[in-house]
Length: 465
Image 1: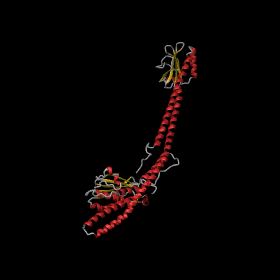
Image 2: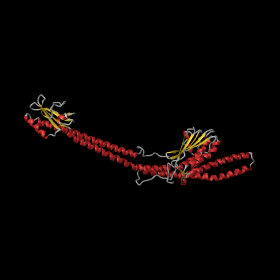
Image 3: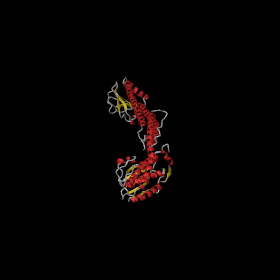
């Protein structure tokens, strides 16, 4: 059984919390910087308008030649490409200054107005940005137009904007790096807990969840689970011990009972009623002994120490041996038994005898429940580097709602079936599969019956290997 992988996507709560905190931090930082940018932009805009109004008030005090001299003198101190003026007569004809015509759309009301396109740069030497302009009437009846380009003052604004953008970028990068680094430690601990939990799920009840020296919430939870596991392991061992002792202790009396019944059968007259009754009693005794042997076999397979005998072997000879062994039984039942396997298969690590026993149970069940004239196929393939063995038949199949229950002890799909066994065969197969760490799937075959597929990829190896 494979547990959920916590490292995929956003399933980790620590990843989500860190990502949420980083996102909120970046959002609030962006809002703060946006407010700063707006305040600075508004301040610089008001400052530019106030400066232009001061120039307009200064020149409004002059007239005649004094105004001309003041304007000529201002050119010396003005920054070219930023400040410009134009002086016009009462009929709006240009007298002197860089501005040779009244800007289109500029009201002649003595107030500062924002011009989106400013003036023609080729003619007046001003950049094609927005600018502030004011047109006022002088004391001698002429018109004075003053223009100031916003680009000079707003260059500071652009510098602040670039600084804010760099600040956001340098905030996001450490935030992402910190999120990645901070979530790694919890994920490592979760993966360690997951590995231990998978070992426990695989049947190693003496395994415990790891604890750290931090004694945080995960350690508290792991300690609670470990206490539960100790109690569960003790109860399971007690129940298992009682069942094993009963099965083991009754096997000897049953063997003696059968021997006594057999001797009585030999002394009874052949064909007599006593002999027929003894035959029935001996048959029931054999059935009971077979069930006890099956229970003891499952108990033996559930002992994880059996893994000490695992070897690496080629599965092809095993499959050929299995086919040859069951071919006469299939022919006796008027069935077609076929082995489909490529020339080469990935080698398998495990107990060869136990795997032969598991596949024998699967194949014997298919032969037993497939009607005469049917077909049984043993198919092997290379599944991404591991051997996959499937047993397919044209029998009645296994209903979907019973495909999990068939591995329980003493469970049979149809208790009234003529060929029904004890309900222990697939339980033995499940014990062998769990011992090896393989996976066994039950499905439907293209023949119309059941398909039991054994994937020989080892999903998990516990510490007792």
